[in-house]
Image (cartoon, rainbow, N blue to C red; front, side, top):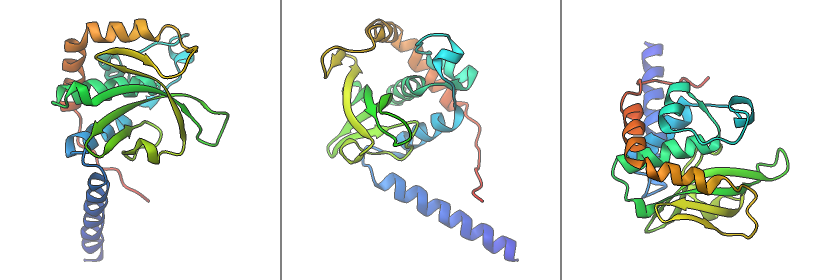
Length: 196
């Protein structure tokens, strides 16, 4: 009987937590929250220098098949899955940001930005909670954004010079990447993670 009550309390607690997280962001419909959580849980971090020997942007299919990637691979998979589920392209951007997580010197990091009537929300592989960009104290500045309009540099002298070509390849194959990202997301296994 105690185990049954404990499970009921745990299920209620999980439901309350999910409700609290999704209510923080009007942009965070169940689809947005689920997509963010899916890719964060399905992919293990792997540095490009180790995996590919260079900076490389994986397609959503490559990320889904290998179940590994770095921050730009998480962002690309989320971006194309969000597009495939009907989020307007005008509301989405991939962004290269200067990130200071307090562990090492600030570094470049890639996230998805989703804009709605309340502001710009961050979908991230490090801080998995969807919050407004201006509430993220660990994001120092946005260096560049990638959207259907192309690449926009927000600071002079970009350090990563091959990103416009990689983004151009992504846009050229958008329909395929949307299909692959949505297929990976739709075939996800249902998992329950227990917290100890």
